[in-house]
Image (spheres, rainbow, N blue to C red):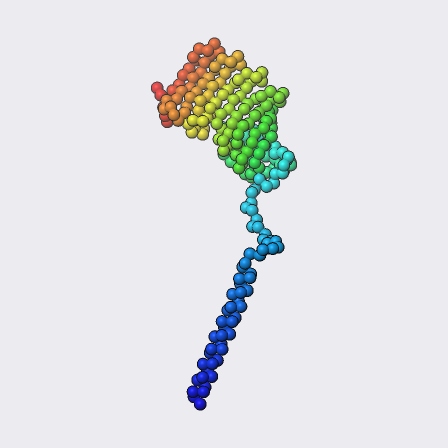
Length: 236
């Protein structure tokens, strides 16, 4: 009787193992069908992940104009630039000595038309990632060229300014300029009288340890000269 029960238990175990194998084989076939790339028909539609936010870049449509308006502060110690898209303010910058010291919002990439109310001038410039990039042109109210400049990642590399009659007034090269945030006279610069005679010049660069500033009379004679060491200190 005991042997008979043992054989029954063994038979049930074999039957259970056979059933498990059958189930596993079936599952394997179904998985193969599911994962196999179909030869016909379109693939299932998968919604792509949303692209990262692009800030103001996404708000600008083709043909829309960005306008920048400049105002001189009441104390005349900085310039406030306000940017508008479709009449709505989108960014604001505080500028001291042609450098942005405070900024809110974001300027869309591309062309920006600007108006300087304090100087009664207007012009065109370009921005990338909220910074000036490439060429910039400024005009007097009568349409004559007032200034032209070139920027790289927000840094002013060179500029030229003109008198109302078209004569050159100033030219500056900032490519190798010393970092003197509190002074405009850095790099290589020249200022001219209206008749084209050199009035003032300076040279304060990183590649030259000794710098200078020189001024001239209208007849071209040297009026004064000052020299500076590599740290910007006067040389006696």
